[in-house]
Image 1 (spheres, rainbow, N blue to C red):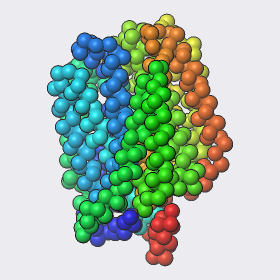
Image 2: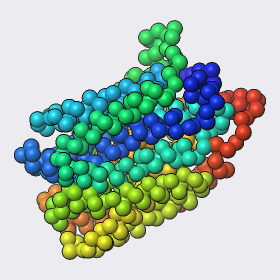
Image 3: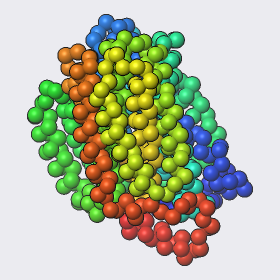
Image 4: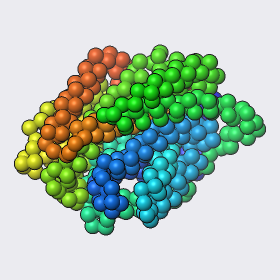
Length: 497
């Protein structure tokens, strides 16, 4: 695989070699805008489910497929897009992804039934999934071209803020827009958002070098590890469909998942360029536990995000607009916490605090009823906002420092995959809790599930001694250009990893 560090200033003329700061706003802004597309589409739909069900003449439960279809697509597409970015160029994949989002926004905005809405959500999942891993790869390449071991902490922090803030702000913004303009806004919002990100990327991000020149189609396919991708997609699809079908489990699907997972491991152990590096996951416990911790934390966050939103509308009788207003502090605190956490190298402390807040928030939901004051609801959602902001930044930082430079795109996508597995599982939790009706009893079932999730996340973080190694020594962006020998040493280390 091509060495990431080989992308030097000569290849990035117009971005690094022009005398501007390496990470000036013109470079990072389109990356932030693109990375925000997936989280905002993941969360904004929450306040649109009830209006969509009414417009389509179906039950609210039937609209849950609009959530699961995007998550399933994104879970598969994120690491796949990362691998494509590594092989064909991060800018190309970023531009292609935002173009797909633009088309999907138009399709969903003018849809006439559930089928085109589902297709639009699948396309949105595929398109938005290209942006985050491409952004991480572009940042890594840009840092190498500027002679930095790592980018300034504010750059990775900004990328995390774009994700953390929009996850929580999505329902609030969605509630406001849907209350004013109708449910189609949940899809049409992608049109201006994608156009802006696309225009900025084409104008401000330097073109990719031609990485595939002289390669045969067979060589390219081998480097992509298409069998590994397909098997990974199959195993993940059957797992997520199994989770989505709860509380009526399909044990055959679970069995197929286990078989496909075994085939995947066996194939990847023999692959020259494995799509899912099993040996790396086994030998790098800090990276592996980062994936698991991210999935658990997002499971808890999405359980409250979707469960509480449905309860506010169906049990408490609030409109989409009113439910969105209640969630605004959650989004604001998520963004603020993410920004503060991005300025600190104490990732272990932030991860412990995040898990503790998740547990506290779970306990705080236990006494809630339809008669609880609004201020209590706002306070509870605020706790989950703090959790989301801190965990997103800290987990992303650990990933950046522990993943090999040459596979940062795939590794970043896999981090999101674990998050989407958590998101799908959250839909299963809320589906079980609200199986018969959306009421206080169902909300309390969700609360107890959150207590278990928070306890597991806290225990996993506290006992993880490898997190101390990922703490770093402050902002890498302040380091001077390394010497030639140091640069070569770092490249060799990345290749060995």
